[in-house]
Length: 589
Figure 1 (tube, helix red, strand yellow):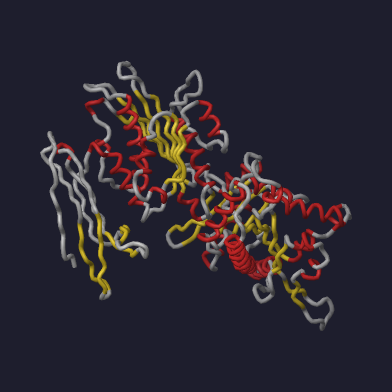
Figure 2 (spheres, rainbow, N blue to C red; figure 1 turned 120 degrees about the horizontal axis):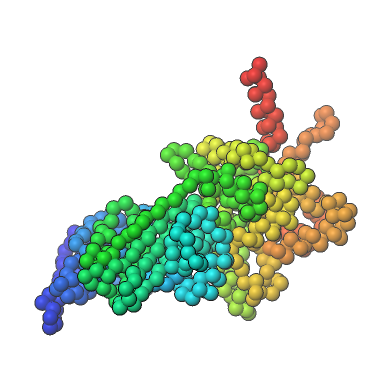
C-alpha cells in the first residue's frame, strides 16, 4: 500500500564523507476503503565513524481535526527494522528502548541521584513518551539535600553489609539503597490507584568521581527497589588503565549505567551490551551485583509483627496474580491514592455482602464525582493559587479516574479486646484472596492492616499515607474538602451519632462529628434488613434516614445513605461463622 517513497541526499560537510538527510517520507495507506496520508520528516545527521543506526517502529495514523496532516502514533504490531547501535549515542538508545518497553511492561519510576548521573534524566526527558515513565527526578547534590530527602520517608528494612568505615558513606552501596527506598516511597505517593503501586520502581544512584589526574578510582553505586521490596544493586568502579576519562565523560557514564540498570530490570535481553558502556581498556569493572528478596522481610507475617511492635502504623496488602490464582502480597511502601473509599471492619470472614456494599459505594461515589466535575466546569475561576492548582488536579483526576479505589481496613489492635495474632491476620488476609478467586471484586482494591481501632485513630493513621495537600497554603474551608470516605453499615452510623459514646452529651457528639468533617472525612452508609422482633412481625429494611433527619443540616451533609434499590444483601458475618461452625461440627461427627 505504499505508493511513494522519496529520499533526498543533501549537502556534505568537510570530514564527513557520509551525511544522509532523509527529508520526507510520504505514503498512502488504504484502510476500510478510505485513503489516509501519513507524513513524517526524519533528520539523520551522523558522522561516518558513528553511522549506524536508527530504529523504525511500525507506525499508525490518527487524524487531527485542526490540521491537514496526521500525527505519528507508535504501534507494536506492524513492521520494524533494527540495525547496529551507535556506541557513542548509547544514552539516547537506552532511553528509547526503555520508553518502548513500557508499552508491554508499564513502569513508573522516581530517580534519586546523589552526585553524578543526572544525564540519565536529560536522556529520558528528551525522549518522546517519557511522561509515561518518569514521575520525578531528584538531584540531592548537597549532604543537607540528601538528608532532607531520605528523612521524609521510612527507612529501608534491608541494608547491604559493607566494610566498617569511620562514618556514613554518601557514596556507597548502602547510600544507594537508602536513596532507592526513598525514591520508591516517593513514586508510590504519586500513583493514582492501588494497582499502579505494583508498577513503581525507586532508583538510587550514589557516586564519587575524582579528577583525571588522581590516582584513585571513581565509583558508582546504583540500586533499584520495586513495590514489594526486592532490591537489585550494582557496585561499579571506573578505572584508569591505558586511558582515563574526563570528569564530564564519567558523569555521562553514570547516567548510561542508570539507564542500563533500569532496562536490564525491565527486560531479560538487551540489544545494548554492558561492553558497549564499560570498557576494559579503561579499567572499568562491576565489582559486585546484589539482589535481595528476603521473603521473611516482605511477608504478611513480618509486616503484621511490625505493627504489633509499633515499628509502623499500617501495612497495605495488594492482590497479585500468580498463575491462575490471586494471592495477597504486602507492599513495601504503604501509600493510598487520592480520595479513596475506606471500608473498615473485622472481616471474619469477608463475604459477598462486603463486596456488594463496596460496589454500591463505588457507584455512589462515581455519581458524586461526576457532579463535582460539572460544578468545577461551571464555577467561576478560583481566587487563590492553591485552590486553582488543587481544582486542576481534582478535575484531571476525576476525569481520568472516575472509579474510586476501595480499601478494606482491618485494625489488628482493639480498644476492648486482645490484639489479633499474626496467624489470625494471615488467615483473614488469605480469606480475601479466596474471595477474590470466587467473586468479582472491585476494579481497584486492597487490604490495609492498621493499629487504629477507633475512627479518630483511623483518620490520624490515614492522613500519614494519603497524598499531601496544600495545607500550608490553604484556609480552613479548603482543608475541610473530602479526602477520605468511610463505607459503613447503618449500625455503625447509629453508633457514630449516639451521644452515649460522647459522655452522654449531644453537643459533644456534634462537635466530634464536625471535627471529623473538618479533617476531610465523609461517610457512605449501607442499610440492612431488620428482622421482626415478634412472631409474625414484618421485617423492614432500614437505611438510617430517620436518624439522619434529626441532625443539623451541616452534619447531615457528611453522610450519604445508599438507597435500598442500589444495595441490599441479607447476609452477615455472624451467620456465616455459625454456618461454618455447624459444618465443622457435622464433619467431626
